[in-house]
Image (cartoon, rainbow, N blue to C red; front, side, top):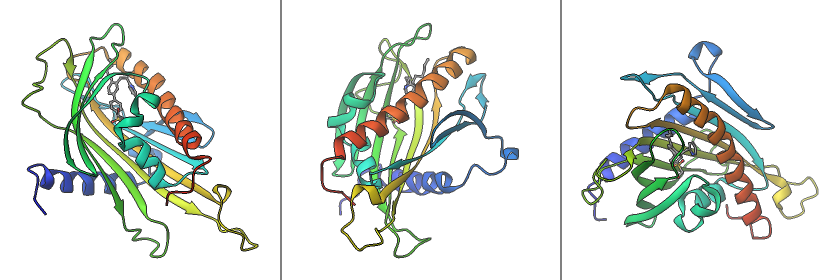
Length: 240
Ligand SMILES: CCCCCc1ccc(-c2ccc(S(=O)(=O)CCO)cc2)cc1CCc1ccccn1
């Protein structure tokens, strides 16, 4: 098939991000600190600064009943649903359809006082991965979003400060077949979600402001997004 100019970068980044997402939190010596918890959802961050800017890596793990990894990735990847669950989104444009599982986006996020407004250009790729741990286990699905350049949307040309991010959503479906051999229902499935992100906020923003924004926005985002997927799928056939 025709190779898009971004394909080598996409391949490399997906493999790298999936490997990192699969790594556990490890013991507390690994620098991961739990900063938010809500039921099955646990959010960790590492405090890191680059040139005095906060670029704290974030890793969230969540287990949600009644949905599959394919469904979670479908609603995360597909542009037509994004305004429904991404509350900080002011504008989203699909810049290029690279393939049916790879898109390029420009997003302008709502301004968060006192920092200046941010925007981001990134490619987004959705992929099913073989479950190499458990051969006959359900597949693993992932979406990787990674900042990229677009000549028509140069960084910091307008009112927004350009941010740079790498995001990996990794989903592992779990099926517990009913004892009595009845057909599978949503009561017998759950999805283990790992969400990893590293965001460079671009222009300078006070560390206290950034950390407060992330502490407030990330738990809200993951809870709202997963509740959205449950609600969208509850009366639809299971998409494995
Ligand atoms: C002063 C604030 C500077 C940071 C603002 C910022 C930075 C990045 C992002 C963001 C977060 C998740 C993605 S994604 O996972 O790819 C999904 C597609 O939208 C893309 C962009 C957003 C926001 C705005 C605040 C904020 C922080 C977290 C979570 C949600 N909102």
